[in-house]
Image (cartoon, rainbow, N blue to C red; front, top):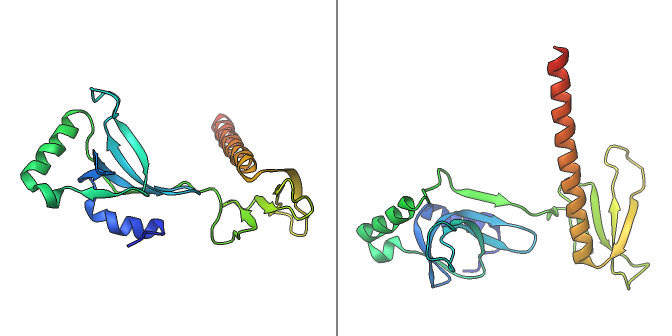
Length: 192
C-alpha cells in the first residue's frame, strides 16, 4: 500500500508507538511518530548516530518515509524486544509519552494549486509569473485585513529560492510578533 498522506501514515504506525523498528533494513530505531513538510513524509525516530561508537550522539531525527520501516516486536518476540528497549532507555533514549504527528509544511495544500501556492497564514502567495516566464515565479504579499487591496509584489525568481525567502519572511514575522507580545505582557505587568 502506498502511503500518500500524513493521516494515513499516522494511522498505520500509531499502534507501533515507542516500538523498536528496523529502518531502511539496517538501523534499529525507536518509533516516536510521523511528520511532513512540503516535500516529503517522515518517520520521527530515536536513533544512535550511525558514525559514532557511543550513544552520546543519539537524537530524535526525521527520516524520509520513502524507505521502509519494519516494527520488530512481532518478529523478535517480547523478551528480545524488551532487551532492545532497555538498551535505548539505559542510554538516555527513553520512550516518548505520546505519538508525534507534526506538520511542518509551509504552503496550505487545501487552497494552493499547481500554479499558485498560498502560505498557511494566507499572507504570502508564490505563483507562476506568466508575464516573465524566464523568472518562472513571483512572490506577493497579501493583505487579508484590507479586502480589495491588491497583492504587493516582492520579487521574481526560481521556485526554490523564492520559497526560501517566503519561509524566512514568515519566520521573521513570527519571531517579531512573539517579541511584540512579550513586550506587551511585560508592559501590562509594569502598569498593574
